[in-house]
Structure formats: structure tokens, C-alpha cells
Length: 273
Ligand SMILES: NC(=O)c1ccc[n+]([C@@H]2O[C@H](COP(=O)([O-])OP(=O)(O)OC[C@H]3O[C@@H](n4cnc5c(N)ncnc54)[C@H](OP(=O)(O)O)[C@@H]3O)[C@@H](O)[C@H]2O)c1
Image (cartoon, rainbow, N blue to C red; front, side, top):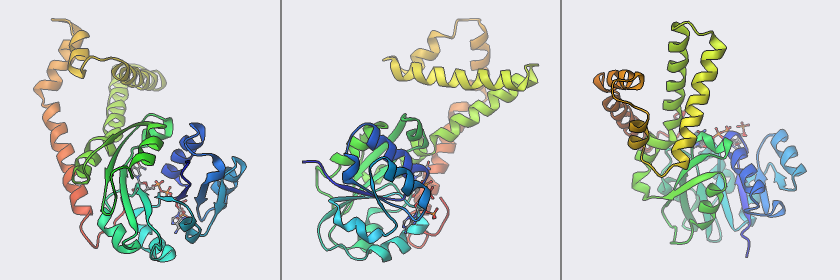
């Protein structure tokens, strides 16, 4: 049987997820209820065959519900939904909100499945970690896994690992974009014009990412394969290693993990994430 789903929040991330669900036919459009306060996403998704509304309470008519609003919008949203009167799988992508907070707000019938996606979901190349949270039973993750596999990859983890996931793959795209910025800037300093330097950096990172995705070799093996002894790549990589790039990244990722833990503390739901 096909599950019916309500997605609450058709903003940046919600919209990418909904488009993936529809494009990959994970759920037929007529089984998908989209809840958003804004008319534009509602109109566009109604044109694709979804049922749309601005009333979050309508979501309780569906078997499962995905919460894709900002964490700071959740207290208001929970007030609109109220206490769930039947067991419902709640798939949440809200960063830093523990499943216990969601269950406290929606009641004992909430079976919470937590997901940490990342922005490449918008290019159908996302990485999502899925965890069974409070009240969830084994198997409740099934729809979330299918949805996130349709817009990239999905891995099942323990909820306690969500902080590490956030630090590695949730925030990870920003580390790669920073690398692109720095490579572009270095190219300009070496005399390339801005648009050529931008194209070289962008396509190199895109191509390296694709190679990494398609190859069964480890990142270290792929790096060694392009690093001939005494060559140009070795000259650059030696500097990156001597200056401690791996240690710097480890420190940065640990800081992101620590921040994620701090944001999850009760009373921090209003903090911008
Ligand atoms: N972007 C990322 O990389 C990323 C990664 C992992 C997780 N996430 C999580 O994804 C979630 C969504 O982020 P986003 O960037 O997609 O947010 P967003 O663009 O603000 O989208 C949220 C949408 O939900 C609507 N909304 C808010 N409260 C509502 C309510 N009570 N009823 C109906 N609609 C409501 C908002 O309308 P208004 O704009 O009018 O408020 C907006 O259209 C966040 O919890 C974030 O932590 C994001």
C-alpha cells in the first residue's frame, strides 16, 4: 500500500524534497499534501497534482508527516497541530531539535524519525542520515529512506550520532564551497581572469566529486594516483599537509559537532540555524 504523506514547509529544503518525491514517483502526487503559508509554492505544487493547503491541522489526515519548517517555527506549528490522536510517523528534517522535543509537543502518538539532509539534495546529489527517534519502531524509517534515496544517498544512523553527521555532511557542502572560493582566488592571483578562474575551480570540484562518487577507490588512492613523485601536484599537496589541512578540518568539524550539541539544549529552539 502506498503511504500518504503531508509535508509541512515547502521552502528551500522542503521544495527540493517534494520535487524529488514527485520526480521519482515515491508517492503519487494526489497522495501528497503540501502545507505552506505561502501561495507561490502551493500554486506550483497544485499544478503538479499535489493537494495543497495553508492549514497545518489538515496534515493529521495523512499516515505520515514531514516537518520541514525552521526549528524556530516549530513551537508555533506544534500549537497549530496539537496533540496527535492516532499513531503517526513524524519525519523531521529540523536541525538540532531532538526527537524527544517533538514528541513532547505532539504527544505519545508521535513516532519520530529524524533526518539530517544537506543542500546538494537540491541537485539530487544529497547525503541524508536517517535515525529512529523517540516513539519510532523499526520499519518507520522506510519512507524516509526511500524519499532521501530518490534525491541522493541515505544512511541509517543512531540518533546520538546526529551531531557528528551534522558536522560532516550537513555543514560539509560549505567546506567544499570555501575550497572553491580559495582555488578561484588563487587562480586570479596567478593571473587568470575572474571568470576563467571561477570555471576552473567549479568544474574541478564538480569533476573530482563525480570521480569520487563513481570510483571504488578510496579518496587517498585517488589522490595518490594524480600525485607523481616530484611533480606539480605533490608540490601543492606537501604544502597542504605541512600546514596541517587534515588537522584543521578535524578541528573545524569538531567545532561544528560541539555547536550542534549546544544548539540542541532545551530553550535554544529559537536560535537561528
Ligand atoms: N538548508 C539546509 O542545508 C538544511 C540542512 C539540513 C536541515 N535543514 C532543515 O530544513 C528545515 C527547512 O529549512 P529551509 O531552509 O527549507 O526553510 P525555509 O526556506 O524557511 O522553509 C520553510 C517553509 O515553511 C513555511 N512555514 C513555516 N511555518 C509554517 C507553518 N506553521 N505552517 C505552514 N508553513 C509554515 C515557511 O513559510 P515562511 O517563509 O512564510 O515562514 C517556509 O515557506 C529547517 O528546519 C532546517 O534546519 C536545512
